[in-house]
Image (cartoon, rainbow, N blue to C red; front, side, top):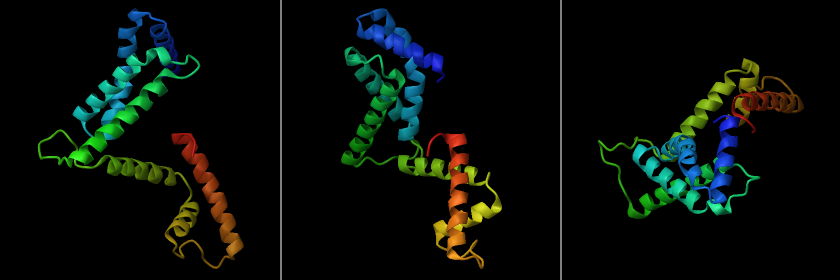
Amino acid sequence: MDELARHRANQLLAALADGDRAAFDPLFQLLWPPVSRFASRALASASDGEEAAQEALMRLFERASEFDPDRDAVTWALTLAAWECRTVRRRRQRRKEVELPGDDHRAAAPVDVAAAQLEAAAVEVLGTLSPADVQVILASVMGGAGGRGDAAPATLRKRLERALARLRVAWRSRHGTL
């Protein structure tokens, strides 16, 4: 969502908080796509994602009068969606629900999906580093001797420090802060 759309969402939610009922429909139209996309990804299910997104937006509209115009409306909506996703996952656990073949659920659990996405992002960022940096980082993480060679421990620490600094810069350029 671009900055203009975020600003518009803030204006509409502030208007709704002030009692302007005409702001409801445009605000819903603006917030529904990112909130439902977020919830569907978090729950790895389109139907559960829609349910969580609906609940989140209902809570947002119920509590519109509590909106602080100095805060971001989209962030608030996504935060409520995250809590609803957590509620859906806990409800599944309590009921010991099992996914059946043919359901619209994906096979992977939400944690597995997030881990796979994070791993893919890390591999992508590592691919932008020099082979020497990758070797030093992997040797450090894996605890192996690869990348150590005949260098002194102080030299290895400095190589690792520099490689990690370059990794952080590469990560920030692609995915934000680390």
